[in-house]
Image 1 (cartoon, one colour):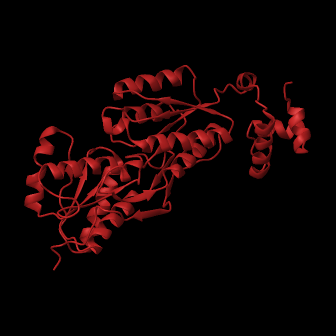
Image 2: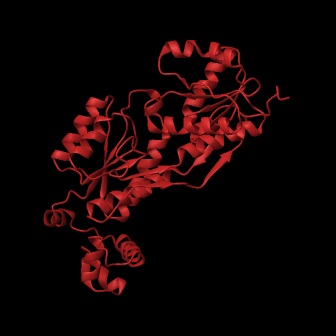
Length: 339
C-alpha cells in the first residue's frame, strides 16, 4: 500500500502542509523538525513524487560533483575524492536530492560533460572538487552564472565565488614545524602538481615555517615529468636534505619508492611527512607520518553551501580550520645529523 503525505503527517503528529514544507526544504521549518520528519519518511518508506515536484519548481533535484581530470593513476586512485562524494551523497540525501558525477580523462572532455549536464538541466548546480589556476570548468560555471561551490580556495574572485576550504597554509606550516622539532634543518617540499591552489598554499606554509626559524627555504621539487624523477638524487645531494614535506599520501609513497631506488632509506636517511591520512598511509612499511584532515567536513559544507545558492538564500565562502591530527608513524625520526 502506497504511503502518502497524510500518513507521514499522522505518524509525526503534524499537518500535511508541514510535511510538504519539509519535502521542499522550506526555511520556515526548523532543522530538528526536518530531521524528525525525514526519519519518519525513511522508516515508513515514503518517497516524494519527485517528477511532479520538479515540474512545479522547474528543478532537476540533482547535484553534479565534478572530479578533476583523471589524467593519472594517482588521481584515479585517490581516495580523497571517494570520501568527498560519500559526504556529498549523505548531505544531499538530507535535502532529498540526488547526485551525479562528472568525470573525464582530459579537461576538454570534462568541460564537455559539464556543459551537457548544465544545458540539458540534468542538475541544479555543481560541486567542483578541486581548485586550479586557469581552469576552464570553473571559468564556464562562473561566466554562465551556474550555481556551484568550490572545494578549495579560488585563485581569483574570492569575494564572488562560494567556496569551502581548509587552512592549507597552516597545515603546511605545522607539518614543517614538526620536522623542525625533530631536529631537521634542511627540509624540502615535494609535489606532483604545480597549478593547484593547494600546492601553493601548503608550499607557502612550508616557507613560512622555515623563515620564522631563520632557515633557508628551497624551491619545490615538482615531479611531473620523467626528467624530474631522474634529477631527484642530485637535488637531495645538493641540498643535503634530511626531510621532506610531501603534498599527499599517495605521492609520498612514490617518493619513498624513488628514494629507495637511489639508495636513500626512509626514515634513516630521509624523513617524510604528508597529508590526508588515507588508506595508503598504512598499506606498506614504513607507515606514513601524516596529518589527518576530516575531508568529510568539506563535502558536507560544500553541499550545504550549494543548496543555499539553489534555494536563493544568501551564501558566501568559508575557510575552515577543521580539527586535524598529526599521526606519527614510521617515516619521521630524529635527525641523526642533529648537532
